[in-house]
Length: 252
Length: 310
Image 1 (cartoon, chains in turn blue, yellow):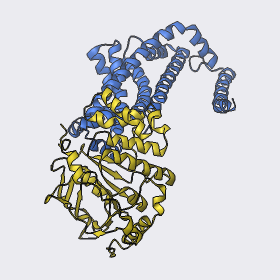
Image 2: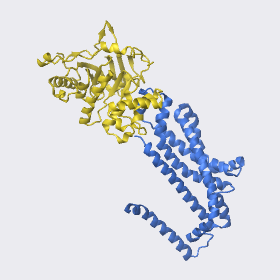
Image 3: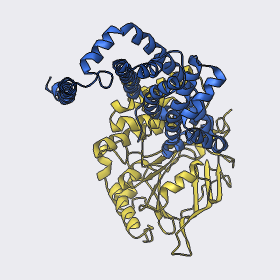
Image 4: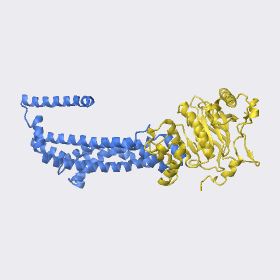
């Protein structure tokens, strides 16, 4: 009990203090609602527009989940190729890195032109942005195998393929989980960037639409929903990681 | 068919290469101890023909010593070694004398050496045909005891079910039957070493290399492991090369002890071990044992150059 209090009390106190000062500030100095709405009206906005917000949140959530799953699958294939073969590493890795040097906001409008404003373009942006940390972590993990372990496999007559499947892949699983945790966070950002550039729905689209109409409370409401969604997604990956690490601990 | 092709011929060959005979107690009591000092590359010749499971001829290996020196560091220099079927040989020597390098060379892990090695009469790759157990247990944390033990068979293409079944049959012999489903993190150091040994020996190879396998264990566990290993090996008829720092261990387990010297790493002297019942804990205080230990320690201190021939 004491531990829970010690963990949660400080951030709760800071949060409450911040929100309270914000509320008091806005009321005391009579700040315009369209400029900065008080927390109370943001909460009222969340309650009042819950149907709209959840509908748009669901659109964004789909983009994140589909894009993230694609990134994970593609990331595993790419990392395996890079870790397995020196030639593939030399031919593929530079492009993996180069792909992250291109600002995603410059690619997103092109995707709109190519595949249209529907969900697909956002899924692609999410996948493009979140595959990178997954690949980099996985490659590191697959290469982090202990040389003594490799030697042990060799004395048992293992082939390169067997060493890869039965040693390198299991060894890299904790690294894969780290990659997924970073990947899911940037996936949320990717979805919003994609929607910002052009979309027919989603929380990013809602923010983009609401700001010019001075529906500032609604923008804040969307930000809060997005934040909560991101935290929940991160927590889910973290939970999966904890279960997986029991079976596949980090070596060394 | 096993690539080393020794299966059918093994039984009759084993007869020809019986270990050193039991000590002559009368001689021991008058102090000659049956301890002999022989040249390191003494060959056993049967029917005028040397036939060994493992033969090393002038095996040498050098590393660059760095920029300060023109010369290379000779880790192994002109090593000759013969091992018959069923023979247990220990190699002792100071740190850095090349003991572990020698095992890496014999196992086939290290291919950068000069000289010749023939194993079961065939020159090709020895990887997968010699059991090698290192000091670290190197168990895979995501596999159970049974699956760790079965790894070697699995890698040879034995089906999952078959390799598990064969590993399972041997668990009892290794005192692990109750831990079949346990993960390595749940085991004691001695148990982990036994799993590693089971994994190494389950693919039925005629030669086992041991690199300080019990070095990380406490003294009591280690001596228990010694007694257990003596019993285990008596059943299997495997040949063994053991590398160790522990002189007691070398005497307790081997038929012959080789003393290595460093810079350059050479086999300097060889001792035949003739002691009483190795499974008797009292053997370590017997006269034969202590006399041999004194000689080995002297040989180690002097780099093995002291004259100890009887």
